[in-house]
Image (tube, rainbow, N blue to C red; front, side, top):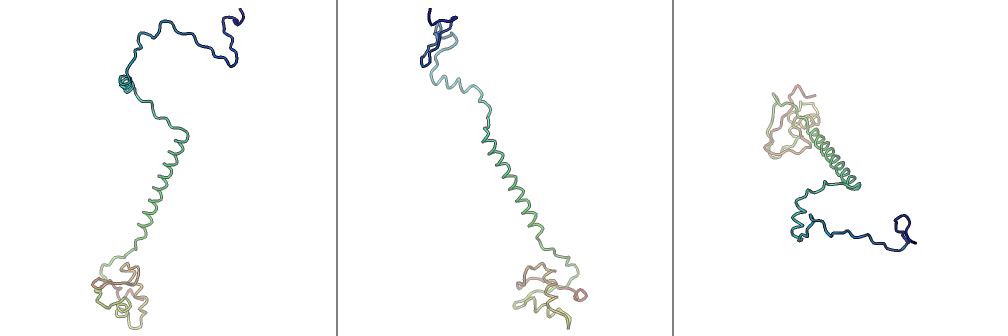
Length: 152
């Protein structure tokens, strides 16, 4: 019997061999289901757990790193702005004046400064006492002025 060697079928390259058919047809527990019934049966099963690919893990790590860096950056910005507030000393016991139309820091300092004192030093002290960033003052506002013994 050519072609048989120990009960095996010899495979020839490029040829197709069929598997032997099962006897008896379909098993008794398998029945033909309609598409609708098959969908209902499939929905009853649990979904497999989500699996991340290598690229998915890299994207997730990069997203978390960017969110963390953004949070740290915003935190440092908030701390920087909080510390940038001008330090205003206590105004207890200091004299004050109300600003009128046409007043400037220079005219107020010139009126308050001692006779031979420097009004520029008084302007600087008024700015420091009132927490003014510039020389702009508005009519009706209250300005604290340095006492005579605090002036140079």
